[in-house]
Image 1 (tube, rainbow, N blue to C red):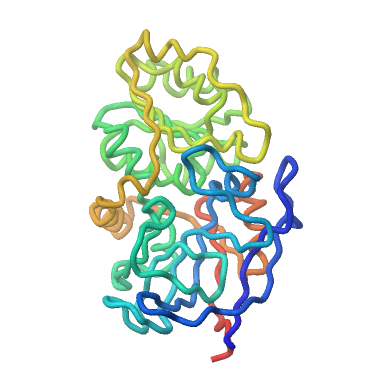
Image 2 (image 1 turned 60 degrees about the horizontal axis):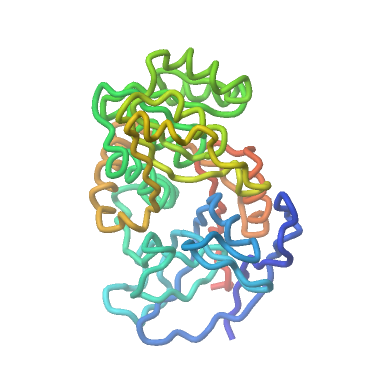
Length: 347
């Protein structure tokens, strides 16, 4: 029987996630049935939201928690080895939602990861796999949905993006700037601030650790029109104070509470009422019908050199637990990816 390796949950995290909470084990590959394909995964997307599924119960309305002793999942890109599904052939480059395993049996039909991870053929001439897994995959779709579909950012508006040195944040910030907005980014530490200014060429950037209020007053003295929220907690509270009347908030994530005790909600939520603000939460899967539109715009900006996504790459599935921990601890920049490019079964 063919075998593979996968990442499994050993124990529920107590506080911050530790590498020892996860393990990489060998397991059998199920026989392929009609409507399925076998994929050799080469690039696994490491996303902060995986942490939400490691607790005993995931947030209401979100994807179910991972079971103890079971494999975890995430978005990934790979090559079809065998196919018993119409529309997919051996050699196809595909996106799927059965990452964190080297060989994956994937259903060709049906929603996965809330609609964002459906098995889909990718165009290898559009970009290499490492670009598909991040910029043209779930990361790019999330950033595009938040800036374009949810916040409806317009040329000339001021957009603040938190965690702007991360995967989604960096794409959202660059996309807003490419669409004619004035973009302010925040991140933790002077090195990340320098990255936002010198490499992503944002209009302004500040270190949130030095003070959110002071940073915003300096970077956006006239206020902001759009806030792209990756952090939640005190960042969202600061945004409510600095948003202009009729401003919009795209609630993408709340990483401040993923790996620690969740922070209390904003104390100043009435600002949303007094300023006629719009706060809208969203998940990429809800905008999957526009994925081709998003991918076309992002690919065009990437080819023109107007949008970049640096990759923090970890070589081999054995390093997946470390990659997840490093991402949650803020030790990565850009897109975090685990690569498993060597054949997993010796062929």
